[in-house]
Length: 169
Image 1 (cartoon, helix red, strand yellow):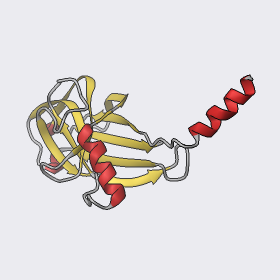
Image 2 (image 1 turned 180 degrees about the vertical axis):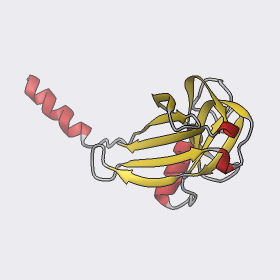
Image 3 (image 1 turned 180 degrees about the horizontal axis):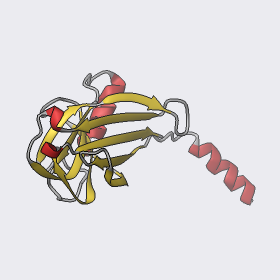
Image 4 (image 1 turned 135 degrees about the horizontal axis):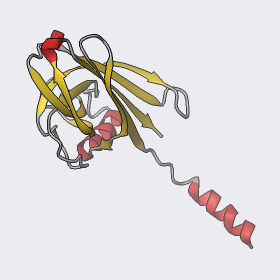
């Protein structure tokens, strides 16, 4: 009887394919001499609007890829209902590639480095990051806050690199 139930469950599960998006970001901050002053890896929150846009991308109803990363200074906890960063400081186009996590090319990798070369000056406490589909405005796919504010002195040569991986599973 047990094996009969297991066989029936196995056949039933084949009817339900599930696609899940999950991601992880790594933030690395460097001082003006290139020394690492902060490093953290965290899982992100995929937003509701991001999920809707991914569905649209699959069907060709949405054509704007998620290839921008933004950083900000708000420590408000991330939520699936977020549509923007709490307090955006800068946004830029990220380099995009794919890598293999579970099956060939199932992971999007976005990398962006922010520094004074991007027009940043003075000081900022960076606490959040997000993935977007436009250079301004647009829709946010993912957001996360860091465990503590990262004090950045842009004029002293500090830089922050965000590496974001979105796994389609």
